Structures are given as C-alpha cells and as structure tokens.
Image (tube, rainbow, N blue to C red):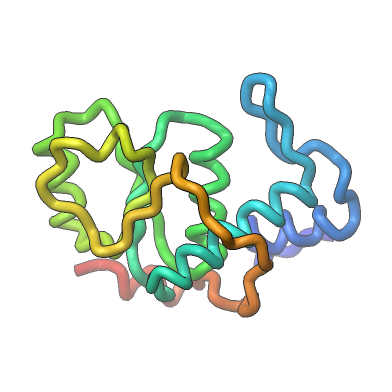
Length: 154
C-alpha cells in the first residue's frame, strides 16, 4: 500500500478518500477525522498561497504544541514551503534573529504571541483571526521534494 515515495500529504489524502471518518489527530478533547484534517489543511494552505507564500520559501510556525500546530505544519508542506518551528516562549530577540536569519517569508501564530518581535515576515497569518478560505487547494503537486531541500540551504 505504501511506497518510499509517499509523502505525509499523500498519505493523509489517501486516508481522507479511503477512510474519511477515521480519527487522524487527537489533541486534548479535539478530534480530527482524516476528511476534516485534509479539508482544514487545504484551506490553510490555500490562504498561505493567496497571501503570497511560494514553493521553497520558509514559513515560521510559532504556536504552542497543539492540533493547530500540526495543521499548520501540514498546510505549509501542502503549499510546497518549508516550516521553521519556533517555541513561543523563546526570548523575543531570539525569535527576531531566527526570523531574520532564516529569511522566513511568513509566520503562522496567534496575535498575542507577536508582540515585541522586531523582525516580522511579510506574510503574517494569525489563527485567532477569521479567514474566508474554505475552498480546497487547486494545485496538488507543490510539495517539496528531496531535490528542493538542497535549495533551502543558504
């Protein structure tokens, strides 16, 4: 069923089609089926693309460990970008340095976590703000390949 070429996105998509109602992700009292996981990550990836995130760019994820963090990571992969996880409890100077040094094109966070950060990317997506992106991603083949990973190194 699985081959070495399968990505996590391929597996989630396959499970969303074959076993859509099975539980894919549990965080506290929140459960996501494979169908819901695919839908939410499609919407988030679409929003990132609409805001200008392109294949090969780096998107910072500054969230507490949660279902939203996992959804964000999957959405970033879906739109072909790479993620940079940053612990929200890091000192603001360190976060600013990581954002600057990585040349992050975007950040996914919560509005309350962004205060005091001196260097912010062009694209800022706060999960506590509402979006109107409910349509699935149009392009499915934007995920990073191993050849793309070499291009991310400075």
